Image 1 (cartoon, rainbow, N blue to C red):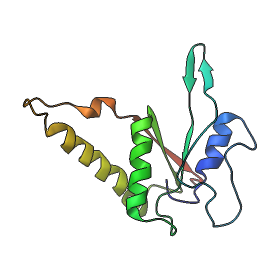
Image 2 (image 1 turned 135 degrees about the vertical axis):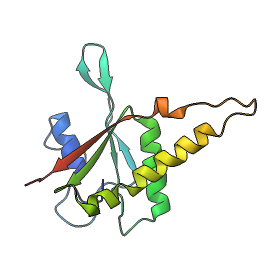
Image 3 (image 1 turned 120 degrees about the vertical axis):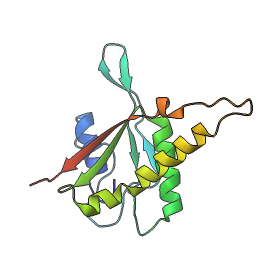
Image 4 (image 1 turned 45 degrees about the horizontal axis):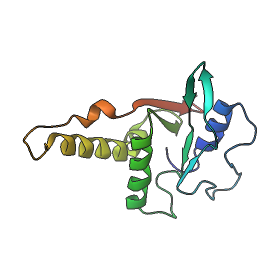
Length: 138
């Protein structure tokens, strides 16, 4: 999600911790790049999860190219992608997902471009599931 929308706070709640991923009360971001929780979390017997926290999209301290790199790495490492946003789904929220859609289109085009032998590889089978979390929705 966008910067300063509570991604680290949400992950701390999912971990059941008050303190885990760094959070702060200022407009300055705490998360830089991509942070990975130090150990897998057991969700069920023999079923583990690794939590990733990312720097927010649209930060004034980063370029859109850096956003794309962080986002791409997160997508490639994830089996479930959680997009966190605040408030109602409105025109601005849809515009904020432009990066998500752009990357998905790029991955689809690259996977359909085919291999040297003329076959294609459907990379979309390996993309993570998508969950959109709406926070502070009134």
